[in-house]
Length: 342
Image (cartoon, rainbow, N blue to C red; front, side, top):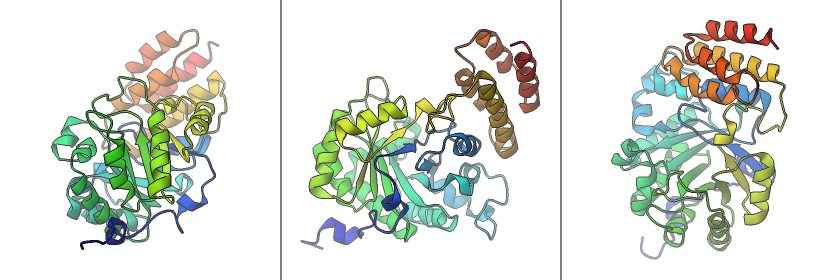
């Protein structure tokens, strides 16, 4: 293969003929947040403030393939395997991208093929997660230290995904800024989109995101892979803030994450009344219990209660009551009682 460009080896699977080519500019997308943007919360978000693209929580490609026997003939989970529950979605959530992680190309190929069978609109590879457990597997942000393996994983994903577009989410470096060496390798692979979290792995989320690095990523893209979309990520507080960041960097879109907590209206920019907010919180809780109650701890909902219930008289006391609730019915009772007092 001496002298053959990497793009020719891996195949060019960019925006052409995929949902990416149909998006408005700029576009605004939902970040994949573990134990946050699960099937229940995504349904609520799609109903009250749908983003231009939705991501699943990230899922182990190795584990997902092992769960294949739990799928029905229609490609949907037929039982309560927890990894497949992470991949539950509705038509209202489209376009929806399945996010996977692994350092094993053979498992990525199989998992990407499974995502295609399950009807997803795209496959995204997580190459930025700083979780130590993930990194011990050579996946997530550890991929930044092994670009050769990263390209092998991308090629495998594209092989398994077939006609589905493949994208990557990463950081600007591991211990230091490595844009000039790391991003060109990713851009050479013909991915449809590249989400750039404007911090290094070492920085985690402990420092402000530096969006000047997103602008640098856009410049590299323009030089090396004009068809690949650049999505900026990190500290986008609202859609208005996201627009400002696009104007400053030239990014094609912005991925918003933590701003979604307690605010499924984020992408619609609607400002709900207190009653609407609390009623949707109850709706969210019931969906969580219905869809995920047999595989996930109800305690996961408590982080959402902290976000939904704040900034009004009696919020602290109500939060304390909600933290003691055992199920959706009890949450609903406590909210109904509270609403009668205002």
